Length: 480
Image (cartoon, rainbow, N blue to C red; front, side, top):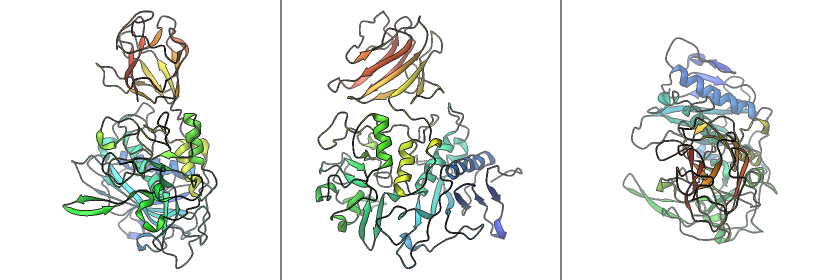
């Protein structure tokens, strides 16, 4: 930290704790102790933003207490049991070591993971893989500048980066499989019963999913991916995906719980009845299978979000786009912390205050007016804070939709701005000549709700919300 003012958080900040040369911050609620191990060079605004992200997780997980691991159990990376540096109590704490590096080339904002996990001694119970030590490394090329990039909800880009990385420290991603004595005891990560080729050569299956279900009973060999060889720093290295990381996993694998709070929340969000959530199948190892599927992205390194879910392509299993625990930062756009992510923590065995989740309704958009000569304003995911829609002349944010699903556009424009879905941007008329009618109800009005039940057979590509009277009042919809 630089500057003369002390950082501000809801917890306790200790400068040069006990003469160690390291600052320590401890949250209220669920005690997370952040130890600035190799000081990341935060300015005051960056430090306060990071503490705000820590405080939010502390509030969400308030009330959790966990038993100590069984003495003598194997824990990851050989880390020994740690306790809270403030009170010596290891039962209700997570210790995170914070460091930094500098990289102006690869576009990675940070990385995080667990380094020591609890062992309760009973492998078929929850709380088996909840961490007590973790680490975060931030890329200092971005951190201080990202604090200045303010979102519509009055957050900033670094806030969401920090919130995301702390999520990994809590076990999201890394806690989705459990290894003991080279055998996979429990896993939340599977393929979807096939051996389809990953489009980026990242192992055997492109159809990676998160589930608590044994998918109909004993998992078969076809539920697992296989090894692949990548070149890292000029050296061929064998890597694995999901369950395939451990060949001993090719056995029957029971679940930690009979259902999944994460999958239930996912189904509620998309009005589906699947038993699994798609995981990222691109961006390389470290990202693959450790994040929710990104969804539509024009960067080919993210692979594809067109998934085969046991032969069901549409609606298939939609990606989560801007949700916090997808792999890509959304820059100046907000990233909701949804009930899906909080459900994953419930699956791991945490108590979670679900009422502290953000609004995340991926099939609902609020549409607002910003003047007849401007693009439409969009409240994504049912939120009331607004961002500018994308048009050919405006670098805004597109709406993305999946065929086979039903979307609601709540119109807050007034009677003089009738809205249609069209295939030609800027085309006016009541209705415009390129009006889309298949699956559409409630168009031609500036109030009420326009509903689009997107047919599975509709052509993929660009569509537009369009005012029938004003050509500039438009917003791109990408249908896949």
